[in-house]
Each structure stands twice: as structure tokens, then as C-alpha cells.
Amino acid sequence: MKRLLFLSLVLVFGAACLMPGLASAAEAKTFNLTYSIFFPPTHGQCKAGVEWAQEVEKRTNGAVKITVFPGGTLTKADQCYDGVVNGISDIGMSCFAYNRGRFPLMEAVDLPMGYPNGQIATRVADGFAKTMAPKELDDVKVLYIHAHGPGLLHTQKPVATMEDLKGMKIRSTGLSAKVVEALGGVPVAMPQPETYESLQKGVVDGTFTPIETLKGWRQAEVVRSTTDSFSVGYTTSMYVVMNKSKWNALPADIQKTIEEINSEWVDRHGKIWDDLDIEGRNYTQSLGNAIIPLTEAESKRWAERVQPIIDQYANAQKEKGLDGDKAVTTIRALIEKYQKP
Picture 1 (cartoon, one colour):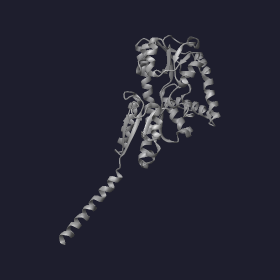
Picture 2: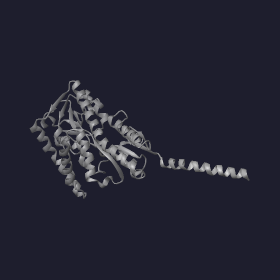
Picture 3: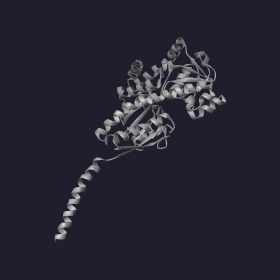
Picture 4: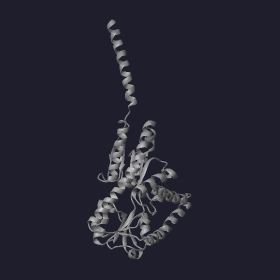
């Protein structure tokens, strides 16, 4: 009987000792998340995404652990957003433009608004999403938005005027194709991986793309000049979004920490875009390729020629019950705001 009583006391004491440990284990729950990124692992923007994930783990003291799947290995670029919505991945980074028509308000960011650099394009894209709060993004938690530096014209023959561009076959996609057409060129739809060979074989005479691709995709080897057509510089906005249920499951203090990191990473992505553009510019010049600035008068001509594209966008949104005019004026105001020193 005494032995049974002793064993009971031991069990009660042991359970009492274990209870705090069990409570601590519950409080120290780890949230394991997956992150799908369409950029290849060597790209600066993928590296920025990986660093963001590492910073989240660090500043949440390991409470959030994120496994990154680069290069579209978990979800392809055009499936990334739905992958987040449906829980295939918890977080995703890709381009809005890969699902053309699904994000009508966010498409405004990609218009040829004359973006001067990636830092400003990124700040504008992120600020636009916060200001407009598009309902088209209500099915996810938007962490932040970033956008590449201005798309410029790169050709085998120098282009200093619209007359020089007339009739030239220019690789372009989406809105940039409309820009090429408005300026008198002939747009040719083509993904980046096919562009080098097409330029090399003369299938196209040039390409409309951020200057970073001249190094990143080695396209400087098969063009001879770049036209600094900043007045019609377009961008491509890219989302970093999270599954809404997974976000809501995070404790408030962890959500706050992640939001703080998000605000820091907007400028980090913008700086990386600008660094990549500088590398592309230096690389093409190192090969002896020309950089041709547009005169002030010519630059104005190009901007006026693409204005109908912007007007058509605004009018098309009105037909959908969206405020396209507000979208355009908001972007212009944000560009002006972020251009100020």
C-alpha cells in the first residue's frame, strides 16, 4: 500500500514538472511555410526573396521557417498566384502580367508612364497597391509589390527617332507590344529565352526590355545600341503574396514583425533592380555598343505617341466599372512624389 502511494506521488510530481514544459512547447509553435518564386535561384530578385525568408526566421526567433522553391519548381510563373490561393504554396512571387486580364487595376502600373528607374517603379507599384487596395487582390494577403526598371529599346541598328524605328521588327510582349506599334515598329511576341537566337539570326531587329537583360540574358552580344527611351519606359509589377488563411493563423506579434520586414524589402528589391540595370549598361558598353539618348523634343514626341495607350486603358476600365482615370492619376502622382529628393 505504501509502495502504491509512493508511486502515485512520483507520477503526480512528474506530471507537475512536465506541465510547464508542455505549455512552453505549445507557446513555441513553429510555423513552417513554403515560398514559390518564379525567378531562377541565381537571379538577384530570387536571392532577395531568400534573404527575406531568412530575415523572417531570424526576427521571429525561429517561430516561422520558410522553405523557398525557386525557378518555378513548385508552381509555374503563371500558376503562382492560384497556387497561393489554393494552398499549393503558402507564399508566392511572380508577375501580374502572366495572368493578363485578371488584375485590371494592377495592370495600370505596367503602362508606359516613363519610369526613370527600378527604385521608383517599385515604390510606385507598392504604393499604388496600398492606395488603391484593388478588390482583385482580396483573396490573398499582399506582403509587398516590386517592379523592374524601365523597359528600353535595344536594336542592331541605331535608333534616335521614330523614323529610324519605322518598320523594324521588335521583340515585345503585352503592353510593350502596343508601345512598339504606336512608335511605328512591328511587334513580335517572344519569350526571353528565344530572344538571343532570334536577334542573332535576324528574325527580329531589336527588343524592348529592361537593360539588365543585356547582361543577364547576354543579349548585349547580339545588339549594337540601346535607345534611352525613358519617356515611354514601362515596367512589370511583381507580387509577393501569402495564403490568407495561413496569414490569419499567425499570432499578431509575428504578423507585425513580418510587416516591418516587408516595408524594408520594398526598397531592397528596388535597389537590386537598379544594380542589375547598371550591370547591364556597363556590360553592353564594355562590348562597344552605343547608348543613344533621345533629344528632349524627340522624347516628348515618343511620350505623346504612346498617350493613347494610357487613355485606352482608362476607358476600358470604366466599362468594367473601375476607376481607370484614378488609377492613372495615382501612378503619375506617385512617380512625381518619389522623384523628389
